[in-house]
Amino acid sequence: MQRLLILNGPNLNLLGTRQPEVYGSVTLPMIEENCRKHAQEIGVGVAFEQSNHEGVLIDAIHNAKGNADGIILNAGAYTHTSVALHDALASVDLPAVELHLSNVHAREEFRRVSYISKVVVGQICGFGASGYTLAMDALSGYLSEKDLL
Ligand code: DQA
Image (cartoon, rainbow, N blue to C red; front, side, top):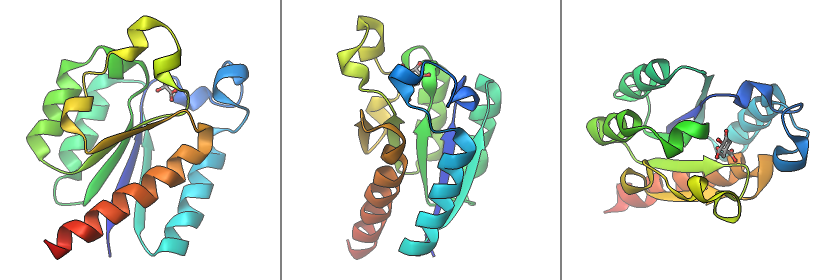
């Protein structure tokens, strides 16, 4: 069974009350529950984590090696700043999907810069909370195709 790690970065614990006009009113626990339900539907295993701390996110990426087949990462603002997250993803060599609830390309200029885009399979952004299940389908499909190669 494919094992997906869904990793959430800073301030995403505040989803639901944080700028709902940008991020919607769905909370992170609701997203987690939906991802777990979706995991059962598509037959994959899922681990779901959130941290406000860059080093904890890096440790989680390291820990994914051997424990997960792929990573879905909403790195929050660290997307736009963190060489360390880029290096962590490059080091574990696991397929990853970059995820954002908002359309980062339609917002402030600084959000158009991503330090992690170079080391992911692809990016999903702008679909709100449903981006999580879209990312699960995308990563699971990628992993299945990879097995055929
Ligand atoms: C975000 C977009 C980032 O620019 C922002 O810093 C976040 C959330 C998103 O999911 O839309 O914290 O990753």
